[in-house]
Length: 333
Image (cartoon, rainbow, N blue to C red; front, side, top):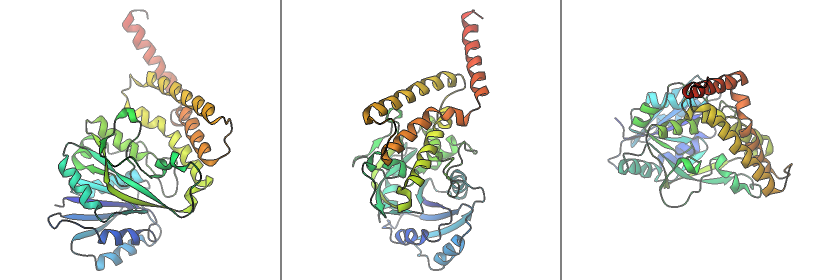
């Protein structure tokens, strides 16, 4: 049994994987640490399998390099396949466009050993940009998995409203097995489609609801390679629309059925409040710069996300059930 598994979920990654695998070859690992790399091919149509096969031919003996194919399209399914395949108590996820520091595995394993009560923890992620980001990009950088949250470890709280990025997160197997359901609400990035993005938040929300703390470990450092295409409106606007649209589904999963109607109203009012504040602060009814437009897109689609994810008749049925239940208790029905 291995102590630590590095999982790389990839789609058509034959040209991105070599640099990542070369970095993993150079990891500085204590001799006592047994670790492995598992590549989950999420229904690729390029030569990803052949790429891994070439690396397996002369992979160093300090770890093992394994390959598994997951035909169901979606990052959430690829990660579930990984958790079914590995046996390690700690599983660290890397994207195929991230590069770990040479002590990332050692830092990730060490933190999990020191804090066995922590269910999941995330990395510091620096951006490596193919082209210069737009002005104000730091305001939206975390949505592109660029995470700069200080140099001291801390526990994420529900009040913060943020969680670690999926790239560079480590999950304790016991927390996953006891908290994460077999079937996801959101299938995650499917090939190049972003419409069901949000699987990382969903997974971490389940773990936190199960009573496992989630932490930030800044000494785990990654570099995220961001191509120029991901800094253009054609990519950014659909990304922020998808994040907003899927917020409702993520919120719905956090509450018990009897809580959902009331929380639907409260979240809607809060989303409206945030949208009004954003308009007043930016003094732009129709934003002209890309960063402000991304922020506005996220706020607008968060507000209207119930219309995308839940048929209106279900909303009305839930509200009616809630009203009947409350009036029945008071003897007024």
